[in-house]
Image (cartoon, rainbow, N blue to C red; front, top):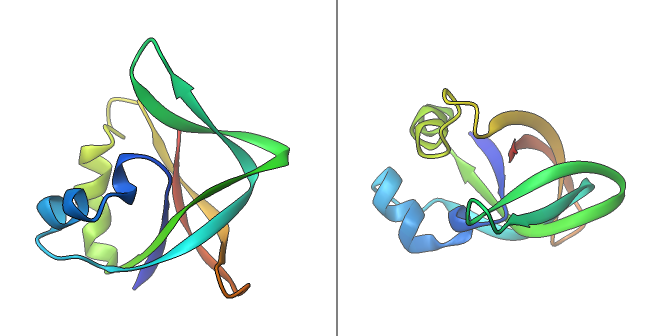
Length: 103
């Protein structure tokens, strides 16, 4: 099992259920060192590194085998986003290793 930090469309439980066929365990979370931005030109949210910032979102705990499905959804092969390793802070203050899509 792996953690994935979501901050845009992937925070929606219905979207995750549609993409994966199940709803993974999710918790409110914080990602330090990144700023959540919105591209008006493209119509989507993205993360950019910013050491003085942080982003709120949802941390999903899911099987590693689900990551390729989410990579396809996020157009990782096309270069729209890339999945990067991050440290996620869960709502209880615990920090876990996981991934996020950086744009």
